[in-house]
Length: 234
Image 1: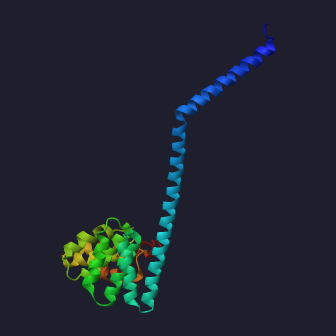
Image 2 (image 1 turned 90 degrees about the vertical axis):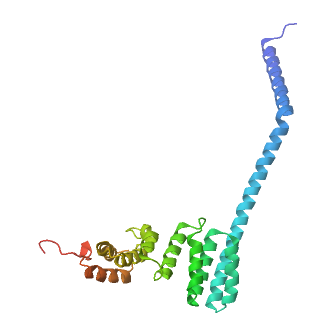
Image 3 (image 1 turned 135 degrees about the vertical axis):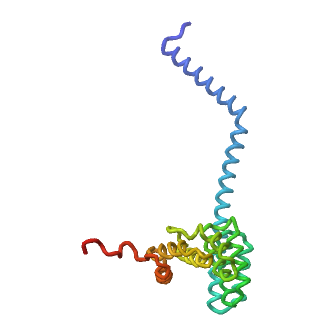
């Protein structure tokens, strides 16, 4: 007996649903295990990322407390205890904390008048490619300041010239040492220009600006800041 139109539509729909179920079952049989494995892998990867980030946070917090503890020990006069904490931070290999610990150890060496050890510690930071660049630059300046009297002037210029430029955060300290080195090299014009630039730079510490203005004047170079120069007609 022929099916009514409504019955035909119902029949086709049921057949279509059955085919889709068969297809889905086939896909699941084929790819179900791979899908489960992929989901499990992604969950494991996410869990590992969360764990790793948490471990880094915990370690950073522990190292921060260790550095703070070293500072407290220094303030309390417990320099041996502070040294132990600082050595542990250096051994940790974490660039920022390692550099901070080396700087602190260098300052303690300077306080003990052990300039040779201090220079070696600053050199460690300056030569450490993993250390943040500001740490390396500051270590280079501190190292040069310690070695300034024993270094050849051209060595000072070569080492510090990249940092002795207007706009550099180290312009004051580096610029003054380079300018003095120019004088030792009998290059007064270059020394005068650099002293004048230091004297005119409002970002340079006042003590360095004052010395630079005096040195520039003695070399016959105008060191009056442009804003302070008298205006025409006044």
